[in-house]
Image (cartoon, rainbow, N blue to C red; front, top):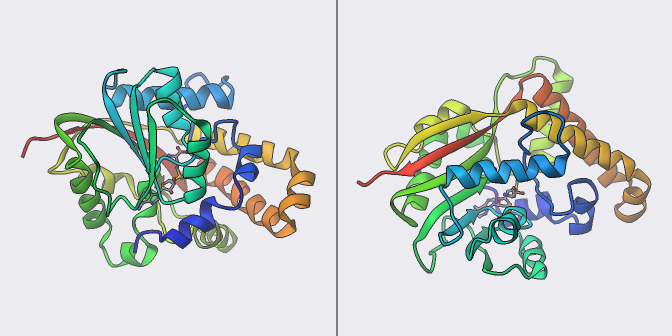
Length: 285
Ligand SMILES: C[S@@+](CC[C@H](N)C(=O)[O-])C[C@H]1O[C@@H](n2cnc3c(N)ncnc32)[C@H](O)[C@@H]1O
């Protein structure tokens, strides 16, 4: 099973204000792209959007769908920073969709919809998806060897939403080396079970093979260190707001997110996890 609506509510619906405190003002909840290592988180997040914009071969007159659009940070970048006239998004979280509507972005429209049931009102010129695929395969399905088939089904379905030749700027978290210490395994399991129930990060090799035969893989760029920096900055901001967070959302939320964020920082530092950006082009079948 892919993450259910309930799983998504657990992951993203603590409270929009809670996430805004320690992410950034626009609420990107995915790895930024640090190019020099000296940038602010805010600048690195815009650089991430820029890389995916280029991978999608976007321009202001082209329409684009952001699959798993979160609170709309990338839609905001498309509409305001790039002047894209039609930028649509889907998310499973009603609170995220409310936040996007609240921003009143020109040309932006969002649906609360599972990608597997979504029938877009039109074909798009390009697709972007930032760390949504990590929700599609459960640990049990991966153990049963179903991961590639499920990812392939995803790439097949979204390919129907564009014409051959269209490009897809895609980003995903990856799982990599498995830690040996029991405590580290427990911390990773905690993150998967309590903070992000229902999903398991893919392996790079699964994502190289799954787009076939619907998409040609044109470019692959990994950015493990960027995710390490991103999560370290989230954790720093989270700790700065400890008093506020405990007062508004309670000690359990603070303890859970403290464990989750510190585990993320370790995971990217020790190669347990990584992150990939890919440029894909729709093949004519
Ligand atoms: C880690 S968040 C990333 C959000 C956003 N792309 C960003 O960069 O901040 C994953 C997003 O995928 C969405 N999602 C997960 N499974 C989905 C599905 N089956 N259909 C549509 N959206 C889904 C969630 O609702 C959430 O918005």
